[in-house]
Length: 161
Image (tube, rainbow, N blue to C red):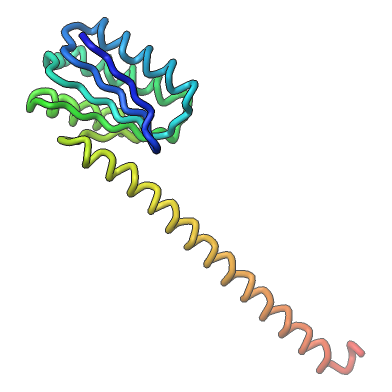
């Protein structure tokens, strides 16, 4: 088993090579948790290469490990990438289970697609912030118009003078 954790500009990239046992998976997650407590990235790319496929019990444990990892930061986006068809299909199932429990976990065939998902999030947040600012400005404009109308009505009403 080999493990590599790299700090990228916008995410933490953890790679596990030649995984054979559930204990190796747990050790990998402990290393990721330690590193992310230092780096504090909200996007995590977990890549499994040349690894043994996950059994059903391993998949359930993997969901629990992902949820524990996300407890530090509930808004974490976690991308799973596997290099084989069996691992990829396991990750689809794992991601689905984690999503059902309210976590942002997705499975991808390539690291490029996973990184695009991370970057898309940033553009969506920017768009949401712009939309929110525009909505707030529109609300302020409506309030100002209402206040101007009230003032105008107050000036026109002889009883108010």
